[in-house]
Amino acid sequence: MLPRVSYLYTLVPQCLARLDRYLGAGPHTPWLEFRHLPLRWQIRFSGYPLAAMPPCMPETSLKAAFLNSLKEATFILRGTAGRVMEMAAGSQTELWSAVTRADAAAYAEAAASLQLSPGSWRGRPPSLPVRILACEAGGVPGSWRGVFYSSRPVAISRGGDETEGEGEESAGPSGLSLGQALDGILREADLCERPGPEEADCSPVPSPRPYTATVCGLTPAPETSLATLYSSCAAGDGFLYVAVHLA
Image (cartoon, rainbow, N blue to C red; front, top):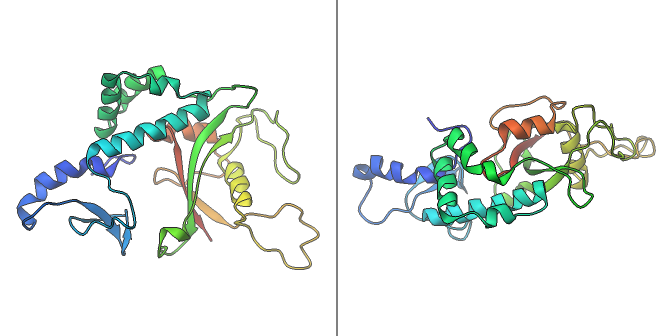
């Protein structure tokens, strides 16, 4: 069984050691596939699709991508990525080792100096690093072109102290909710319902298409505080990942 939040490619050495006697001769470069779409759940060991996705091995490539993502998240949270960039090589190794072992306690200790919590900087409101992947529900996209992807800072207003757009609900005492954040992002991406002619003049703010959001394999209620979700479900690279299934 794999941890709910884990980096699958870090498990490749264990997979190769366990399956080596069943594989054919020659070098093996594993990759994941699901219904001919790379990077899903069916593992392959040859014919790596270089045209569809960059290589994920050796592990140094994964570590570099992880640290780059962590820098981006830290900048969104604190206004600077300096703490990540100034980490000693040994500290980076400890952090990466904790991630690959899914050791939450060791990760918390190694990441303590990074201060991965939202704060105001340069007059900007506290923001959270969020990544969203949205696609049609009930089916598998034929390519990644059919998947909407967004990586961004999401400002979290506290107690409704920020000005809301016309027709939008203000944030409650616990701050911006998951539903409020997703509604705004889906509107920006024009993933909205198309009103009929009789409704076009009555609704200045379009409604996003019905959707179901999944975080870490769970389906939180739309009114769940985004800050609470982030503190509980953020990945090791500092981002909160949300899968959106559009109706």
